[in-house]
Image (cartoon, rainbow, N blue to C red; front, side, top):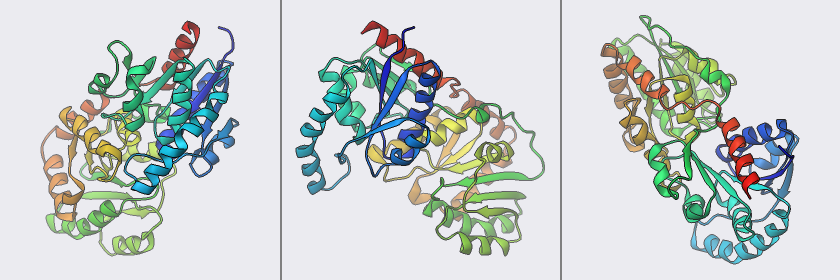
Length: 357
């Protein structure tokens, strides 16, 4: 295989940047040249150079779920930024896109220059950019079977999202007399889950449910939550951040979390049952669509954000934990979504489309 040059498009959040970095590392290991296109304000500005990859910066704003002024500014800016990106795609063998507004200009420039574009769409419903360009892409790498309908027949493949190998190595744990409950709203925490957790502590005691709770709160409100938990009399701890999330998953019997693509992919890799409270303001409400797909497979219970409180949390936990074999069957259902080797397969497909171009 001759050595080629690949452009990675997509930035802003960790959900866009981290999977692209996993694919970029795989391409680099295969001897290819890889560079990223992103913005100064996105997470890529920090993560990409730290991994030793070049970041070419562009200036672009969002179009979806933004105010009219921002939308007009972006529409005016878009053709100029796309024109600038046309220089970046010269000599590129293929473009890999994670979607998001940052991906728009380089992907459109690639399509205009007939450079193959491979998109990875980890959500059940594609984001705005991937919906807009769906019929023009060379290949679409998806996580849910229903997502394939948004792309031309024969061009979608279920690869899943790149997930750390440690999640796949987690083995099912036998239940003990104490239910180990992991609550996490991500690295920044979730106001809804923090409040529901706080409300649930006295209710768990009152219900006589034997639980051990590890609650990742995020930095905001951590001290108050920790003090409240210390007075609850329950086993466990409240922490602002969990550095070793695979270990936290391995110790958990049940996970309570949001339903972004990264979270559901980690649940699947670990084979963990979950209570999912989708973030209601996610673009295109994709977290709800993700949670619905996982719930249909019997791997999770969906609780809408506006219904998630302490009473509801305790009721659902008690129901799931009190029924013999339910959590185990949910874990098996989650594992059916697991797709190891997603970064490797994405690199292989990029090499294929580059070779055919």
